Image (tube, rainbow, N blue to C red):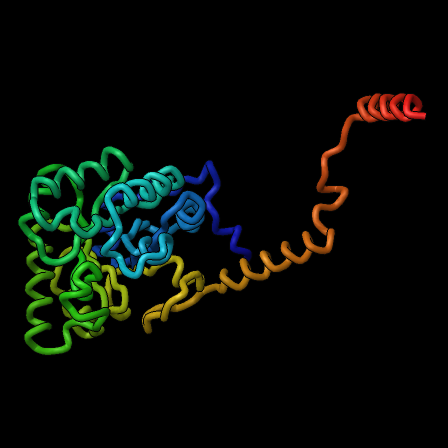
Length: 298
């Protein structure tokens, strides 16, 4: 069956994905799918493929904007990209990553920034890293659904000493379990588990009521998320162990660009069929004018 057979059409009856439907999936033991997207085109394709949740991740700093890590991404950049994604999406739930510095210093400012995502970009939830349970409660009071995120949290890159698997020791496992339970009780509608051993992710998934979304956390989570650019081979750094590449889009783009360059240089592009032409009467009039000019120069 072709890929187009799975695409939604404008008249598709697929229901809008919500906080309730995501939680219902866990209760029904149905797997949850999530991918990142950062612009209109990719978000539309991801949505039409039937993905449950689209995360406008601060990973856009590295894969779209060329930063070394996520730390430099600003609120304005996140709002800009979230708006583009929101315009493309009809069914998937759109979640905005709150960037570093937007919720770390002052809870009042954090709430204002989260509300900006809801009002200005059309996001339907925000994601924050670490077990900030009091902030989660205050965001919920402000009617902002929250996705939690524990384990390898990229905004703690320097504190962790790099992108390293978390939860390897008994103490670290206990801490992760404690954080997961605390966030679950605080009311997060889902919980990202990143870069932790499979066994630990399985324990957390069994312990908490909220759906767990794994990334480098094994197959026992309630759902999975990956960076779209990673699965398409559109990133230029080292690929994490947990990434599976589903297509070589970089190769397709490179081949297309090389072909364009070659055809322009050899004159093969554009062709006669790819050019516009004057109406016959206009062309005839121009030829008459040209003939008169030539006659006057004789």
